[in-house]
Length: 127
Image (cartoon, rainbow, N blue to C red):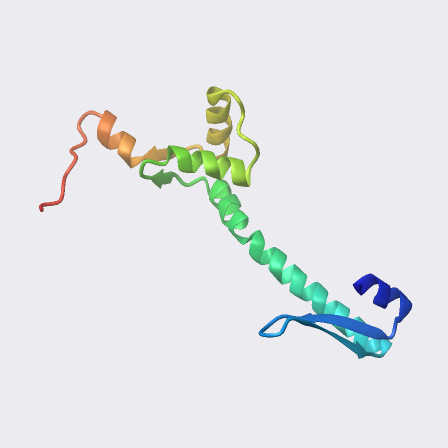
């Protein structure tokens, strides 16, 4: 319906209005108004896009920083992080480890350290 109206009546603009009553609003506009509406729509889409990729930028900054990545019981977290923000997981675990360490050269898992590194005391909170 939008395309039909857009091409058949170039001086009309059709907008979806969502709320208590979902409806279409058709109004007449000048070329300047149409251009302004288009620019506003593009700006809104660009802002949505920037929001959607915002956390990816955080991950990229973490990779570039060269600082250690520290977490607790983070094996699955690292897998999700790799697959969601870098590329699909390889079939071979050793290949994934090599690729992961290219992204994050220093990874410290505090659960692993507490369980398997001699000399680290594990303290429990009193009840």
